[in-house]
Image 1 (tube, rainbow, N blue to C red):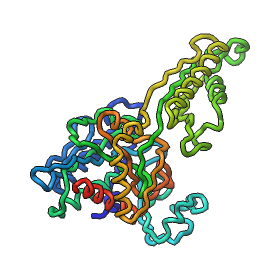
Image 2 (image 1 turned 90 degrees about the vertical axis):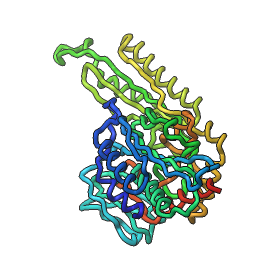
Image 3 (image 1 turned 60 degrees about the vertical axis):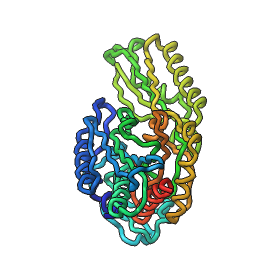
Image 4 (image 1 turned 30 degrees about the horizontal axis):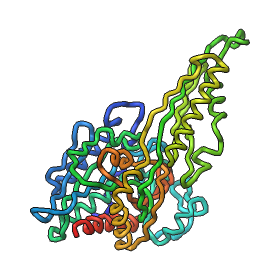
Length: 405
């Protein structure tokens, strides 16, 4: 089975994670998907495939040598998809031999190369798309599809020499909890690669440093007819707080190594309002400056409106994994070699986000990220290139081969 065929099957699982639910996994659909993946892995011949009580899926492909000398290599992807766009009802299809023009996803919904120039590079490819009413779920079901297609190759070709290969699928990566209960010791790899989004050829060892800031504003409700000099409208104070953050440092105005403040959600009434921000920067000192600025805004508003009007909680999410991965540069070198051997051009770039590898690298499992052959993640315009997904699988096979040598 090819990777895109697996993707078409997997996208029908509505596995959006929900940050408000503190259980693991945060949604039962992830458990259902994980159970079915275990069944698929067992049927494939991964005899130790299993899922733990927290929804983490593990499996092993034993080395061809009964006494392997090389490292144990792992491949990791995540079960959940983003909640930024709906994930159901899913109506995925394949557009064969894309002609390079506008794609009518459904009535009134068009994906155009004028808006998404990356489509120009996909002319002649077969593309997997949704109907434009939901995201496709490539992030990260394309990663799972690539890993299991790679696994099927080695199981079906027992004479192909390789070391021990470990497979792991995590829940709740999209809400930054994918590594929380990942059992690195049980996984048993010396190092791993996440296969988590982006074009074929992407090799990523730098991520953002990331924090979450929760701003809770307490107001005072009064009848509007007698509210003069008495009412404190928490929703208006929330707007004032938001207006004090630099408008140029939002995701839609930044790129490359530029950090940002991103208003993720806002809930508000007169008596209470809550703003949730994700704060990002590749440089940890600049992230600290952003956190300090948020604290200054909270202090200013408390001085203006009274103590305890604004309560602020800042939580660390993950840190830039490059500090770990620079000590394991062979991971980057071999990934680039594998991309070239699979017919691609390595594209080393910073991740404007994070992966499970961001946390796992600091937990003792060095873990750079590889692309999946997909584009426009977290969007209703998300799509996958069939040929790029095939090349991703080939590059994973090549990585295994490089370490076998």
